[in-house]
Length: 407
Image 1 (tube, rainbow, N blue to C red):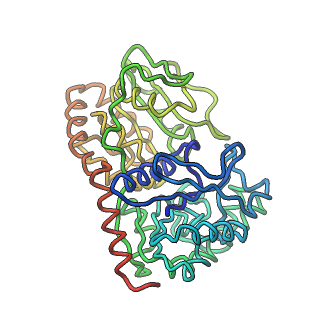
Image 2: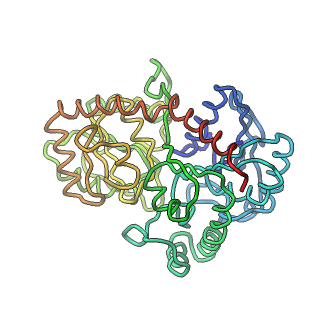
Image 3: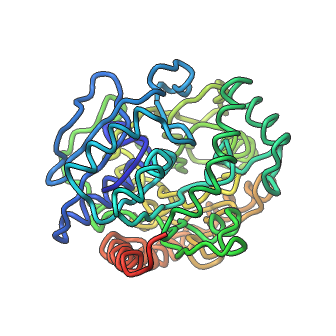
């Protein structure tokens, strides 16, 4: 049983990861179900191929502030009484051997773990084990670690006072309980493991990255996209991701404005409050783009840019670029150095450094044959991040958790 706050048709990196994992496990003969949060207009239960999807409502659904700015509802970082009760009904009916949590919905399972008899594996896709914002960003830098008053102020500035206080107290208060309950953590990068203090706290863990389907780069001819399916007629630099500051978009726009004889810049992503509203000449912005169009965009691009200014845990977008044979210019932060080998599959630059980012992009433009070599090397390296290899590693992790003494 996989637990995830969100699941398609809500689209995001974690949501696609959970769907791909569920389908990969099902294809290997496992009986798989997914439990997720209910959103308006969605069925409470349905099938996604052979995977059963359960959508639950909880106490958190009574709170309007539980929605984020995009209308998505997340589970709280503490056990939700009604979510736990509904989850228990599903567990009693299905009797899973193993529960695999992917974010804060996992915490509503904690009171049920002992009675369920299931082992608990938890993938850490971000820094939500210790950070109320999940981003590990404090003011303009990387947070050095949680402290109650510092976290309360930081989260209140981000969420508002009441929600910030609830999320902070829930994160810091329930985190130690989660650590004692999880049989095996699966952080998606070395950075996530390190910043989550797994080794320091002697928590059992194994780094297993995000992954993409083996055929992710195969876009069938004639596949219909959405209203934004049109792409640029000439080659372009491509950015895919949230149109936000922590993803480095303002830095990218400033760097782009410095380029000589720059080709078009195509931005594909989701707008958030605070997203830029003006862009340099030559920039095209496409929002809420179907995934098939994202993959088609990679095929038509010169190379990609992942300019994150926060310790980006393990961005799947980098794998999609590599699977399309495209070089990357990326920030040397978070899990990106696990994916991009500097001078081999792309170029790494200090996060937030406009000059270094502009120089690296210009180098790619001035040496297209070098960019092509980087792309071909990335195409070989991405085999390490394909479903066929990573899902089998997840299976082995499950066996390790099932063989360990219960916590």
